[in-house]
Image (tube, rainbow, N blue to C red):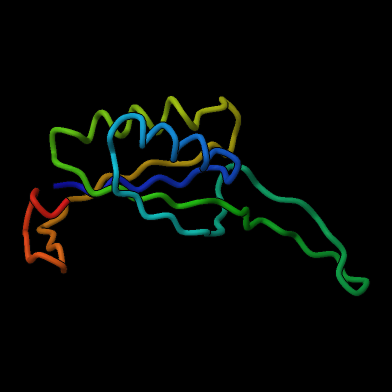
Length: 112
C-alpha cells in the first residue's frame, strides 16, 4: 500500500473530488494547509509596517491505495490539477505498512 499526498490549489479541490469519485477512488482525506515554495508571496502593510506574506493557502489531499493503483491516482491528480503555472503543487508517494478498518477489524488492502 502507498499513501499519495497531493498539495493542490484550493480552487482545484472540487474538480479533484469529482475526478476521484468518477475513477472509483472512494477514500480521500482533505486538510486545509498553508505553505511556501516557488509561487512566492506578496507585500502587505500591517499597522504601518511592511510585511512579506509568503505562506499560500493550499489543500492537502491524501489517498491510501494499493500499489497497483498509485500510477492511476497520480495521473488523475496531475491531469485534474495542472494549470501550467507556478503554484500548481506537489505529489508525494510514501509507503504504508498496514491499514486497519476500525469497524470490522479488516487489515491490509481489505481495509482500504
